Amino acid sequence: MSDDGFSELAARSAKVKNENLQLLLGLRAFERKLLDLVEGLGCGGNSETVVFDEILDQEHEPMGHTACYLAFTGRELMIGWKQVPCPSEEDYWTLCPLDKADTDLHRRISDHKVLNSLVADLLVNLDREYLKTTSVVQSLSQFVTVEKAAMDADLDGLFHGNRMLSDSWLKARGCVLTDPELSITLSCSHIETVLKACLKSLGETGYQKDAIEKLGSKVLDILKKSSVIDEATSQMMRGVCE
Image (tube, rainbow, N blue to C red):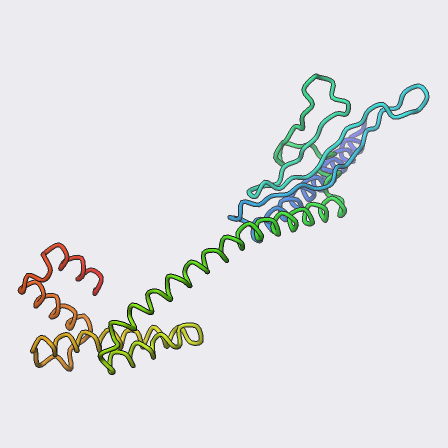
């Protein structure tokens, strides 16, 4: 064979290899897109089954074929394939990652119908995951609502005899849903108001300009010296205040 023949063979071979590589890279890009969208959800899906390499008997009736499908495990794409009927007693699908499958399988599962069917199955499975979680969330929300109502009632009772503390608490609680950031700010102000009220009732002075951390420290020091709380409780409360 002439050098021209070998050169042409090399050129054609490189062309085919490049196209095969582009096919694999395209599947990898599809895999990355799926990962970007559903990674961490533990949700996968399977495409429709593709039948090929059909075997006919002497009467030209189908007697066997090869089947494959594209699977997404939640972490990667894999290709499942098997011969039908199975030549052994164990009828199971063989799963392999993209880089272990041959180009023919890559072509089969790259059809738009196959890719779309995988996405459709993922959507169905995501809906199932949502329904399983949302029922638990609703139950949890009901529990939290009941617990919050009980806690609010307890706090209302504690502040009932002090108009200033009651107003401060109600302002912070009143905007929890409508303006959470404002509620946090008002809650900090409420804590400051409570600490100053405690110091006032304990006969302390000179605390009006103190920061909230210093106010908390003063209250804890007084309670500890009075043996109202022990050292362990004092240290724990200081950690909360800080």
